Image (cartoon, rainbow, N blue to C red; front, side, top):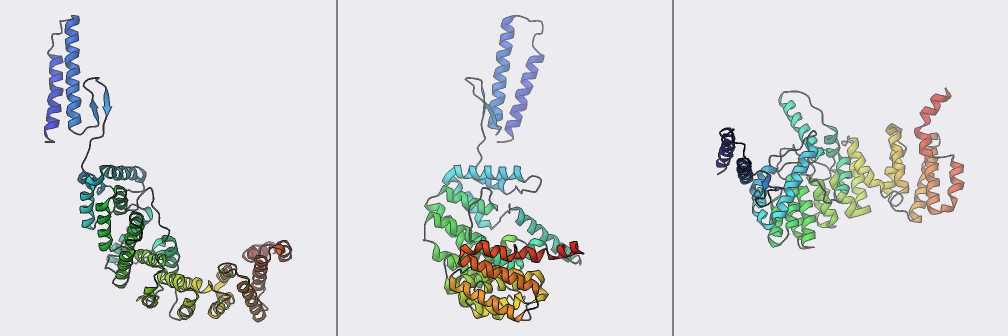
Length: 447
């Protein structure tokens, strides 16, 4: 059918031109001129109507002869096909994302008529990532594999290093628990999840529940959990947890290229934290150290949130393992342990080990932040002050350390009794951390 319209349009144009060229040029009467204009106008209307039938944007109202803008309707299947062709790049990102959102809105407006086409797409397992960080990660991973195949040495990217480090996954697991809907979808599947949610109804809910039971990505489990919780509060909690347990115990084989695959465990453990699921604790204890000898920060985050102080002895034993050499891994364990300084003997011992280890340089002073965070009860704060006094007794010659410890002691005192703020600020001579970190520049000026 579509091939007929260009032929029709060409024929109409030919008729118009032929009529004008073969007109009697000698006839100048007003009636002939009027006749000619009417015929041309009719041919123009016919041309516009043919263009409209061919899927053009402009159509003409034959009664008023006014041009009206109309978007040619396309089927949900065509919309999905168009979406599959769109891949935003840094150069075309804004325009392409506008197209993507336009198509998503079109599917939403199609209402239940769009559900079959969307469901068929979900069954293919295909996806297109839109988020810039994910695209960069995927590209770097592909380039690294290609270089490795050529026998070239490759170095992990900054994104790769952070996400796969113990501290990166430990830190990010807390962040991903606050997932919210964004204006721009992170991927085609995530965008279509929102479309199905917005269409609503029993069939839409069934489609999303079916995807939940089949997905292999932690991000999608977390995303569907949020959506289904809005559509049917508490109905899918047990289904979500069953999928989480299965994917953690029997992780799917992936090609390792996708950021969505690499970050799956963070999203899965964040769901265990969300639902305060302690049934996975014993299994998680065996997952702290990966088969590659690295710390899984997502596991550490989960155990810390679920067990609280009870997790400290286990984590302290891991951090003392001499086979553990990665600084990011140690930071993940260290941060979890130091949350209980002032109340737990292992936490106190680890704090002392860190703060007195000169080989750690300025990094050791970051541990001081834990002395004024977390549990702020007076008994805990007094215990921390006593710990500071004990450390000063054993390290009397470390001037920079003692200055930092004194500043922290005074800050704790102000937390207990705010009325002492002005007095202690004056006696301390300013910000002790600023004094420590700027010491080198001051010494250079004095020279």
